[in-house]
Image (cartoon, rainbow, N blue to C red):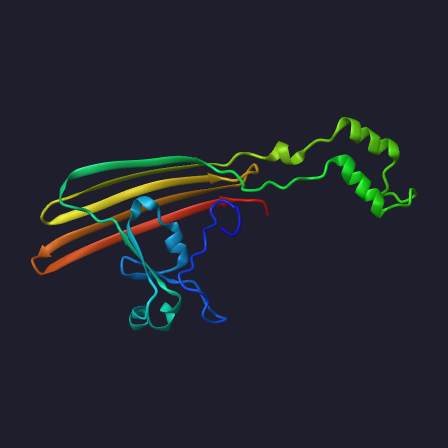
Length: 219
């Protein structure tokens, strides 16, 4: 991720930049070329297989667009058998790899006085003010506002079928909050893959998917 903002996706690079206008790889989901946003919207419970192409064969299939590689995604399908209900969930905690160290109030005031050395300058702190914060410290707004990000994910799906029809129907909910209050991201997913064998030589497939994301952040 290029930022810690909740809901921001990671960048994917399959091949090194070959030109000044190198772009992201192509994303193909169930045989259809989709956008990076569609790939990011997938929940892990929906995915059956992910593979990547980066050789010369990609140019034969996708033309010049495949020069930066191709990401192939196959979502889960139904299978013959009694209906099977599955649930998966997770709770994770995030922690920054590095937390910046801030000057205390007294050090900040001394540095400020070094810049504004003239005591008559309104930005200059008096010795009494510096002494007060040296003795009593200062309020840490960062420590007061900081929250440990906790992420939750829940997914439910049902699969089943018979000799004629098989189905996969699933839904998921993902919640991610930031390290500051009122900064979070919620995502709701719904997917249905239905295959119907009309004749021995004809099969009809219906694929429905929808994803809704709601992000709150400071403006």
